[in-house]
Length: 337
Image (cartoon, rainbow, N blue to C red; front, side, top):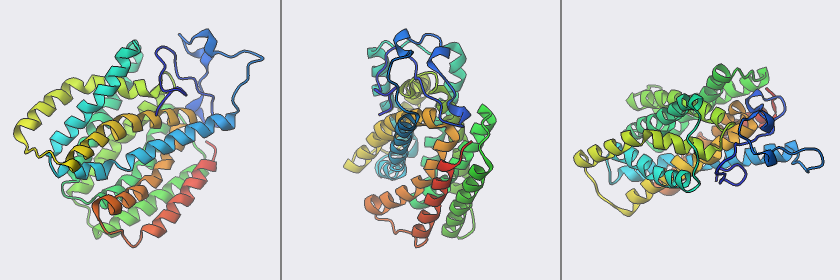
């Protein structure tokens, strides 16, 4: 899914045309060391329009959000036959299989030393931190409630991006983002009866670590294909996840049902690997802050899956929330940073 327009680039560096007015995407092939000469197009070579390039980035980001929207329902399925630590560690170990195989088959060189700190943040945020915290929260929370709380992730990611990359989105962008966040918070508070509980606290911490992981991943995806970003993060976390999986399997109950296996397989392949591949490439093209606002639609998609896959009742306020959130997305996509 995630590709340097082909998802398979054994050498090469992801080359993105900068989106107008977005400092997150300001990078060129000529400035990246090690870029093959053939990748730098000179006069006379046809170039894709900026609109088409941004359109592809937008599509990839949307595909990433669609994959992530199934994460909570898949986690709930996994928890029907496994403990929370088993679900988290197994999903990461299994996701490392296709990622590591691709890195080996294509003989991808390890990242430069300067990139390993960012990869460690990705590993801590999206490979370990967010999956663990949200899985523990889902032991006592419904997927629909967790989905609306995690709806704050776009604002957290945009704020983290502004601090980390120096991006300066416009005032309109921030106003629309805040309105979207207020809508999501109001929805979450209404559903929880106005009293945040332990699962809410776990979800709020998960937002922070995930925002950091998304920001670093989007930044790194401007220097290497996004599938390599998540691939190296999974490899870096492998000693922890293998040891954790072995320990969890020895102490937690295990019942391999069709639902529990399907849930963990989707978490590993769909959410942890392919979804991250598409998401990081999309952020690299259209900008971290702007792409993050697409996730305002993720809670609404998760609500739909919760009804269809888990039989949960759709909250009455969902349609109104959907319209408000989609309006905020439209504004943030038109606003220039």
